[in-house]
Picture 1 (cartoon, helix red, strand yellow):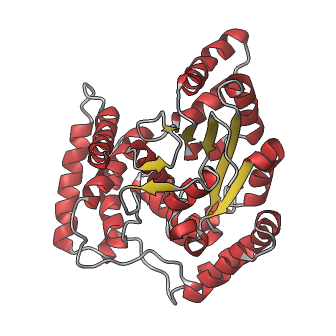
Picture 2 (picture 1 turned 45 degrees about the vertical axis):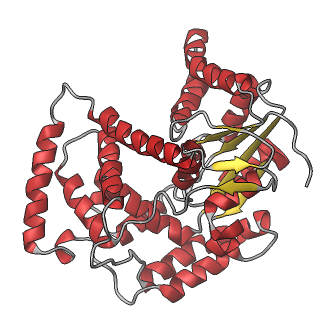
Picture 3 (picture 1 turned 90 degrees about the vertical axis):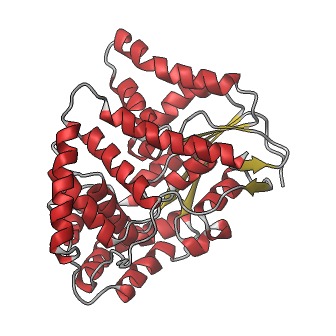
Amino acid sequence: MITPPRKTLIFHIGDHKTGSTSIQYAFAKRQVELQGYSVFYPARIASNALRDQCLEYGAAETAEARQKAAQPLKQLAGQVRDSGADFTVISAEALERVPAALLRKIIDTFFADSARDIRVIAYVRPHAGRIISTFAERTKVGVPHTLKSTLEDFAENRKKDSEIIYLPRFSAWRKYFGDRFMLRPMIRKHLHGGDVVHDFVHHAFGGIPFELAGTGQANESLCLEDLMRLKVLQSQLKAPRLLRLMVGWEMYRLIGHLPPPPARTKLQLHRSLAEDIRDTYMQDARNMDRAFFGGDPLLENDLDNAVAKALGEPQSTDPADHLSVSELRSLEIMSQMISGLLEQKDVDWAAFLHAKRVRDVQKGRKAAK
């Protein structure tokens, strides 16, 4: 093993739905201990505000606007520079939507003197899994268009943007960061230790031996029944995007503290949809395999496996097909009451609900000591 230089800054840039929350919780709870080296993690959970800060800086058209946008970036760079730790990890899956050229410019402008070595690491989830998990996530956090869509509708809409055509985006990261950029496949059997947190620590820190306290994923998939319960709640809310997001995460947090329900159905593709996804993304999968995985057909095989494992018929995403009439009535009553409470303007509900997640992390940090 090559001894790494002091003061190494690692940017973890996602992607979304690749275990980022598990990685973030592990560092926020101080569960990662490197043998012979120290780690600084500046976020309470994640640094996703960095996305908007980068975009604001990139969009600034006047010196005054640029100076204002630079302030939070200078502050973060100062934290890194002033830290006595050997490594700093900045984790923000939202950075997947920041152009690679812009992040490189920001790093060169603000972070170049904060560390002797700067690395960027990302994970890519195979196409079929990305579609399923994104549909579930956007249902959980109440994206209005997704609440009205079937999984098939959602997959069809994804064709209209470049979100899941991976090659151009990841090629840009490699163009601007060269061998300082690393891409890992979010495929369990190809992860170090079969786990994304172990894989990240192993690869991001160059194979330094480590110990990891705590087990389990921080953002395990909701079963279809619980997802439908959340859909009932989100369908009743008249709330802005950020509040819907925090409500979804708070309900998810509470579900995680309860015993699993007696019925647990996994959200899955049906065969015709899986075949359509394979046809749509196969060329991108093959291009990615050649460009980033030495020609091993990792993403290509996953598309074939998605078809092989697909259901014969589509799953319903109508709550009435998964929940009893009496439960639906109870959920609708409670959801309307919650919606009414959230209309109280004197309370910053988004901040209040986010603080509950932070407190959970802090409790975990104490337990890990």
